[in-house]
Amino acid sequence: MVFTSFFSADAITSGAPLGADRVLACRLGILAIGLVSLPVFVEAPLVRVAPSLCLVISVLWLGLARLWRSPYGSLTWGFALTWLCGSVYWGWLRWFPEVHVPVEALALPWAVWGIAHPSHRVGAWFYFGSLLGTGITDFYFWVNDLFPHWQMLMGHETDLGMMHLVLDQALLAVQSLRGILWAILLSLVLLSITYACGRSPKLHHWVFGGAVLGTLLVDILFGLGALSR
Picture 1 (tube, rainbow, N blue to C red):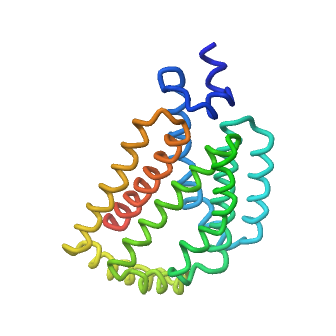
Picture 2 (picture 1 turned 90 degrees about the horizontal axis):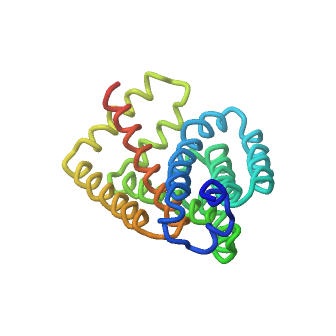
């Protein structure tokens, strides 16, 4: 009985108490954290050399979403939306940081539709969590005037020497008092959202919280990587 409840579509649509579905909620949250990292560590490098292939992979994700039962199929559907929007931006528009969030938000109509349909609600909330995390990260870049560094990095992708120089300049802004205070403030916002979602009995809220937390963890990994060069 416990095992079957983990894979029950009814568990996703009813908002059942976590006493009955805590393992499923944790599993979905962990999957959401992992899925957030795929566009960053897998899609972003791949799309620069094969953007059309990434669009095809988006279709494959959507196909898998139809094959898998809810909630995993629903989560895959939401991930496919994120992957599709990321393919468009990182494949053809990555030199323009100011349009990053608008392009990542192209699938908003489908996500809004998904919220109203229980079979797609988990995926819709994953998409919203990923988009929110992206928006907060981009806000940090904007408020610390890092968009010019972003553009220079994208313009010198094959020049490692220039990329290191640009990263060193960006780190000066990140390590400033302003950069540190904004990093702490926005991290607390993301952690507060994650904590609130973890207290919810709704499984799709756990997925939303996992996507938000995944964004923060990816940002921390990038920051540590840049500081340790």
